[in-house]
Length: 352
Image (cartoon, rainbow, N blue to C red; front, side, top):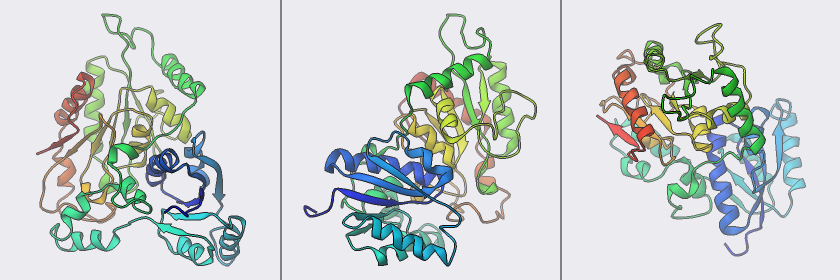
């Protein structure tokens, strides 16, 4: 390891959550090894690395760059321009493997554990259970370089908001809610709860009616809330529904100003962790063995111990039990988890 270069090209094109999870590993390598990074990712996720103390440049991969036959020349150009650098393949795709073939320096690839995950899935959760539970995705990224990997606490993702961005998030919410809504009778500040009711795969989404029940409970207690994310408006016409109205960094600034985020297994879940906002993560088709549980010190996971879980790698497979794994998570469970976060309870997982 002594002869490894100090400069590395990092390849991670998507998706939002996976890109955010890489931020902690880059910070860790910068702090422990003094390494510097250029990052290759898609335009939608480039801003994740704004102000990151270890990232010198973000190289945006355009649709043209990623389409054949120009892709091969583009990847070869990356290798030529970064001669003498190392390559950190944190994606493990055909594109990144072609880039590795062109690379003239050291190549390190993260431990994707794809075979172990598939074997675990095909055997109903028997094969490789302990091996998969031993590390989360940031640790698997770190295993590209460090074996054994550092503790998960050393790799918690971090998005570096500026003071101006944080002030914008607070100001936006202050303008959205009257002063009396953001104050308790005691005069103490009340920060809103963020709701993210969307999922890349529908089977990973908690039932819409449950989210509405949580919102009704918050309204009943005078606790402000906002909706964030991408999709169809959840409460059309309601100014508190910010669906599709914010950029990645604006969403992060708003999450930083909230007391908690309620969401399923999603990219914004990791975005909240990366700005220090506690997460109530609702997990159904996917499980902790996949490595995507939120990793912040106050994050909490709600899940039900059903024999059919997990049923797919990404929650994309249809469910024969009508989404029972998520439907069994009740509104009371979520409200209790929020109460625990607000009271400072350090417990992070709730399994029943």
